[in-house]
Each structure stands twice: as C-alpha cells, then as structure tokens.
Length: 448
Ligand code: GAP
Image 1 (cartoon, protein in one colour):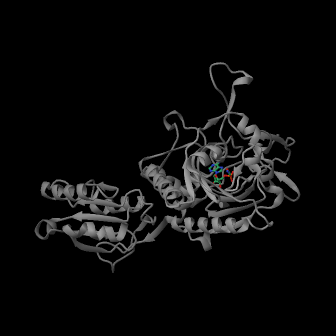
Image 2 (cartoon, rainbow, N blue to C red):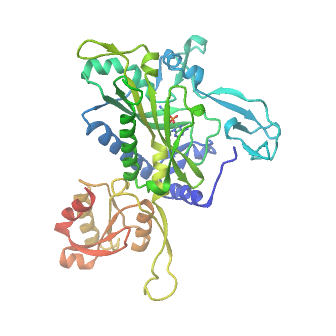
Image 3 (spheres, rainbow, N blue to C red):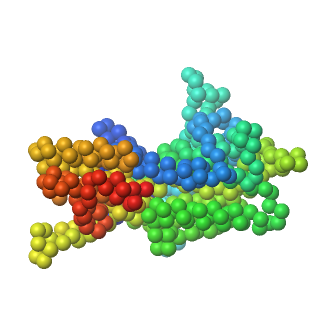
C-alpha cells in the first residue's frame, strides 16, 4: 500500500534521523524498505521503556515472574498453537501495478475496490498468506529442517508454563512477562516504525483459575485494562484525547481470542492499534496439553488474560505525544519582533534519553571546561548525562530540546566566583541559579 505520509510524521521521522534516534537500516547500501536501526538516543529511549515495563510489571509484583525464551522454537509449537494454520492474512494484488494489499484493508469507493497507487480496480482473487518467517535449521534446506522465527513472544511463555510452576511454585492467579523480538512477514509494512517485519514485544500471559461463572474472567481483564491505561499515561500519552478503545468485532478476533480490546492511538497517519488486551481462554495451554494442579491435587487448565505491548509502537506514540513546536520570545529583547520556533520533545523525565546536559559557556576557557567536567563526572554516576561544548549555548539548548533533555546546566564566569550554575528547564525555559554543592539534591527532587 502506498505509505500514508503527512507533514507531522515527516518532521518526526526527520528529527529521529537528524538527532540519532532512528536510522534507515543498511543505508549505505541503499537501505532496506521498512527496516530501521535505533541510534544512540533511540536505543536509550527503548531501554528506558523496557526497563520501566519490566520493573512495573515483573519485578514490583509478587504475582509475576520473567522469562527469556528462544526466538526459534520447535516447529511443533506453531502447529499446536494454531499459527501454522491460522496466522494468515488475505493477500490480493492489483493487476495493473502489481502492488499487494491485505484484502481487508483495500479502499472501497462507490462499491468498487480501488488501488491507492494507480487507481486500478482489477485485483487478483484473495489468497491466504502465512505471516511466519520460514528458515532452515542446519546445513540442508529440506522439509525436515524447516523452522520459524516466532511471530509472537507469547508461545515461549506457554511452552515454559510447567517449568515455571515447578521452579517457582507460583499459585494462581499469576503471570509471566517477557520482552523480545517477534517477526512477521507483513504484507503492508510501513508508516515509519509503526509496522515492521522485525519488532519487539512486551507481553504478559496472566494465568487465572477456570471461570466458574461465565463472567469471572472479566475482573482480571478489567484490572489489566486499567494497568494498561496507567502505563500509557506514564508514557506521556493523553489517554482521553489520544486513545480509542476498540472492542474488536467477533469476526476479526484472532483464532485464540474470545475478547480483545485494541488500544488505538491517534497517530499522525490515522488511528491505529497501539496495544492489545486479549482473553485467550484456555486455548493455548490446552493446545500444548499443559495443566495445573491446585493444593488439593485437582487438575485443570488455567485461563489466560494477555496484555500485549509493542516496544516500537510505544516509542512512536511517545514521540508523537511529546513532539511540540513552540514560538519562543525574540532574542535578545523579548519585546521586539517575532520569535523563532523551537522544536521540543516534552518526554516524561523517566523516558528522556539524557536527563541532564552540562555545558561550559565557552569551550576555549579551561577553567570553565574543568568545572563543567567535574559537575558532569559527579552527576553521571546517578543520571544519564551529556557533556557538550560545541557551538554557542543557544544551539546546544536547541539540540537538547530536540532530544528531550529535561535540564541543562551551564557553567559561566560567575560559577567560578560563586560556585553556582544556571539550570535551565526544558519545558518552561526558565533559568535558575543553583549552588554546585546543592545540584544533586536539586535533581534528586526532580528526576527520581
Ligand atoms: N501475543 C498477541 C499478539 O501478538 P498482536 O495484536 O498481533 O497480538 C501485539 O500484537 C502488539 O505487538 C501490537 O499491539 C503491537 O503493539 C505490536 N505489533 C504487532 N505487529 C507489529 C508489527 N508488524 N510492527 C510493530 N509492532 C507490531
């Protein structure tokens, strides 16, 4: 499908490239369509997301444990899970320009399907296309050696259910969390890092007792719905304005799901799925012939609630919510003329790749550089810090605003006299003088 683009998305993509968040992959060889590499700030941002998710949902909860399963599993896993048979998208091709579409995403105009690329209205009949990436394990490429890259992290959790019960003696209800890569041979990747063929998931399979009454699972589902909303708020998303909860219609549910809510985010290119929350019933454990024994030795198959979050979509939504363009007062006199426009990423402090940037006012004054370095060395033991002495201070502020750094510290000539520095706040752009010996306390209050 012709990639939907708009001006805001192009600005965000360009900032990501310019400032080192996301690069087109294999760029020196002409790139690789819809494949991206995370640069120095992107990797920090992703790590902050994954670390916070892990702490909030795995480490801080007594009813959760973690796992890191293999990407390539025994192909029997995918047979049992239903993915070999069911994990398919309907594919059609425009007969004129040969662009391929997911049949259910084709645009209909006046009762006719229309190719977004060439306007053609003649398509091949729909063929089911399995989304799993196939590979061969070992040197011979024969049928016996076929294996798949996992299309979801979830199955690694299900097939380890017994190992985890045996080693942790967890009692229901409890959950297993995992962060890791998943691969899907998507028919229509695109919209920057929104839909790619290689991506990362943060998934929880939360095991609950067999619902005695039909609605017993709903309280767990509702609990996780609230947790996901809190998480999105934490990410800096204005949930009321930017999120739409779609109750996925029955005919569109995945083969394992009895109920799914898609949390759709208002991306610049349209309202699309950010995360999913599914009630997978006992489908998976039953498929793998796994069960659970309670204190009385009674055996049964637990049911599952699954909050599933994409790391890359978290990055994109956080960037979209944080991206702001603001008019700044004219310099040097606020009363004269038009101000410039500044671009700023108003990321939550925990998410910002750099928390504090430290500048000497001038790079060719060794006394300023020495003092700034001392402050930097001290602060960097607690926070992700950056030392910058390039260009004038205005340019340095602009750069830090664009990567979302909440605070900048400048060492000037007064610092040498008074042992204090200027601390500038990213959002208000207000500057205050803080004694150097009080800097740690100052940031502890703001950043911890
Ligand atoms: N285990 C359930 C599962 O995989 P899903 O709705 O297919 O459900 C869960 O995927 C999440 O993974 C999505 O909500 C999205 O955040 C992310 N995701 C799925 N496909 C993706 C893709 N091609 N590119 C980037 N993220 C993707």
